[in-house]
Length: 270
Ligand SMILES: Nc1ncnc2c1ncn2[C@@H]1O[C@H](COP(=O)(O)OP(=O)(O)OP(=O)(O)O)[C@@H](O)[C@H]1O
Ligand code: SF4
Image (cartoon, rainbow, N blue to C red; front, side):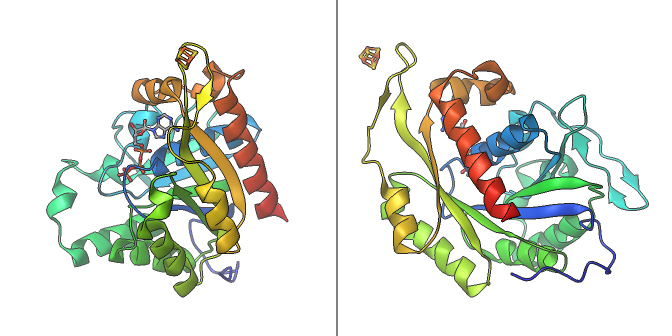
């Protein structure tokens, strides 16, 4: 996808890279991967933003323990909320603006797309190295609304999240077709919940067949960014809004996430 003329005004002008995080279906860990990639990039000294546009279940505020703060507006738009005292990890979630998280489910298409459109263009991010956009699952009109609005500024490409089970279904392939049709570069594929890390001995067992994500990447000519195991310590950290990477730097899951973040960053900067 082409970048917008940088002379045009917009709240993404000082954002170096915009990355969509997509999944063919819900529950594969898209919000988890978005959150952990943001934390990994932030720990490696980058200034990161997360735009949580997942109307169906904005879960990132809980994962980052920011709750439901009051959001303020300045001349440039909505002011993001910071998830860390150093103000290196900015978050704007559609959940902050919704009275009742269940209300979006009954909204009709045009209302959703109008809200998303406004939301995407109206956040005052300031300077960021990377903005990760957590989109709703699937390939709906909501995706197109996100894309149309981001495209006015810039989008580097998309990270596709899948699981060993989902890789064999049509969902992830539909997502790939969506990227091709909408001219969004696939930056890479992440296989999440790839094996199970035993909470007692830290051994990783492959419950489902492994390697589907890598296979899919080969088939579609995409980069395989890596796999993240199903780790009960990660589940608990997300539930408690605790920074897993800070708490468990010796774990194999830490290494897996950090390596994916490094590979993504080098592909963005190449
Ligand atoms: N690698 C992992 N290890 C442990 N738990 C995980 C992992 N990935 C995801 N989870 C857990 O699985 C659940 C679903 O993850 P998540 O909310 O990230 O999925 P999602 O794809 O964003 O879903 P949706 O788009 O429907 O909101 C969460 O409870 C999360 O804590
Ligand atoms: S994974 Fe194996 S070693 Fe670890 S606790 Fe379970 S049975 Fe024991």
